[in-house]
Image (cartoon, rainbow, N blue to C red):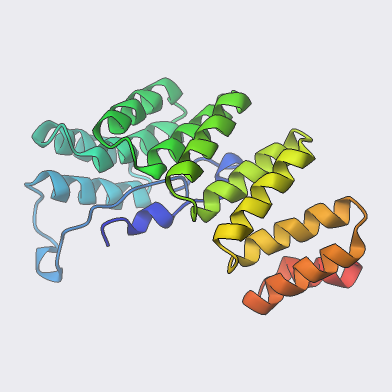
Length: 221
């Protein structure tokens, strides 16, 4: 489970950043026998912070993360998750400070750049957000949510050629991504390429038959 909660990433978090789906990182080392024990190690305090954050107990989560960092100042995941908490509180400068520290500790962690991108976007700095999304993808070329969020941002900025480049790169490295095929379908539909959009939607549904949006748009093509 070392990196599992890092999968709690969501393009929807820009609409509601008061959620956990925003780049949280786990380093859970607790076994079933540890449940109910008071935390004592940096890892246990971080895990306790994660649990508090999950139930929106922000003050308690902040205390736990800070205690984790006090015990081990070099614990990058604790810095990352504290940044998520600060972002939920819209304390973006504090979030960036945590992420810059995490970047120093682990410069090849794609989740750090993803979170830097998310924070930059929330601050309205779209050029910086794009750069950090691209940095995250350069570190991990199968980072699906980074491709998705970069595509959506480029699309919002009416950079359709950039969005096309992003989604084609995503499908080169993660052809099994139903969401990326779906986004390609949207792009081709917007351009009036109905045959290409139909093919993309069908591919998305082949991978994930439960992708409702693809069914909806395919019916409208």
